[in-house]
Amino acid sequence: MLISTKNILRHCSVFTIGLLLFFSCKGEAENKLLEIIKVKEIKIKPEVLTIPNPPYAHLIESDSGQYLFYLNPTSMSLQFMNMEDGKVANEIVLEYDGPNSMSRRSGIAGLEDDKVWTTFRPHAIAYFNYKAEIQFKKDIPSGEVDITYVGSSFQKGLHQYGDKVFGMQPLFMNHHGMGKEDIQKHSLVYSYDMVSDQTIWYEVYYAKDYWDNGKKLSEFSWARRGDKLYISPWYDHEIQVFDMQQEKVTEKVEANSDHINSFYYVNEIPGTHEEGLLNILNNDLYGIILYDKYRDCFYRFFYPGYTDDEEYAIDKLWMLRNSRPFTGVMVLDKDLNILGEHIFDKFQIHANSNVFVGEEGLYLSLNNKNSPDYDEDHLRYMVVQFEAGE
Image (cartoon, rainbow, N blue to C red; front, side, top):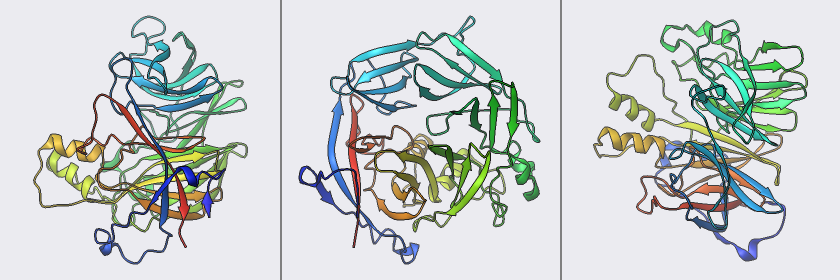
């Protein structure tokens, strides 16, 4: 079965990656191995200085062309870059003092029509226009548990449905001081009603057995399909479906990767930064979930644990943590049935950020910082689709 909206096979090269020796200890596979269809590769020289994996990257496709919307950390501005020539077509220059100050910004939470959603510290939501003028801002009060932070990104964004704006708070406020019973007090989803001026925290929690085998960390991303949000934890298999119209979880699905079997349990604070980074690197975790409206499917990224005989300095450990050695992707249909999985070559892609969906397929950054092909001067993408094997 080809997960595609049109036949482009004659323009593509097809290759399959096994890594059977590396994953032989993971047990017998149950999910299908997906073949990857490489549509094309893109190499862009930005007109202005930026980094190879800019944060909050989001593809805009219009009649006038393709544009990459992202935060440029060098200029601290939001830019719309033409994907053909690398020129900046438009720029939102952020202010850091005065009534439109972004100095306490905690993330960019999405792009909607002519406004940009954002979050602030300690906990507020807002949006501003293309002139960087804040047009709406509202504090978010705590629920049953006092919160100190509401962050965001394009994979952890704000979603407006009718008069309500839905947001997330995935982090435990007191990981080491909590007991297992406290998990069901940490609500993960809130909404703010722009008409009634009310905030609601919903009965959406990590699974009751989340800490049965030890204290896992807390984090998730989500994706939107219509009136539903798909909550995908990084340290658990289960995906929850939150219905924004009904304002409740309507479905829970076990979406297990064959390669995710050993989560990181943090029962005690690591003795050193190096120890903590090694523990993260050695264990498995999930990552970003994306919805593909063109093929009506989901992509759930995952990272198998990695070990070798080398001893690394702490700066190298940070690089390995941020651009994992091995990256996989699980493809799920609209009902969250697993269509299959694919493992990319070692250091082939960077998928912690700077991944997005377009009409031609899934855009993957080829700038893994640990790769010998890492290119500081260009944005590099591989556009892919997937085909289920026999």
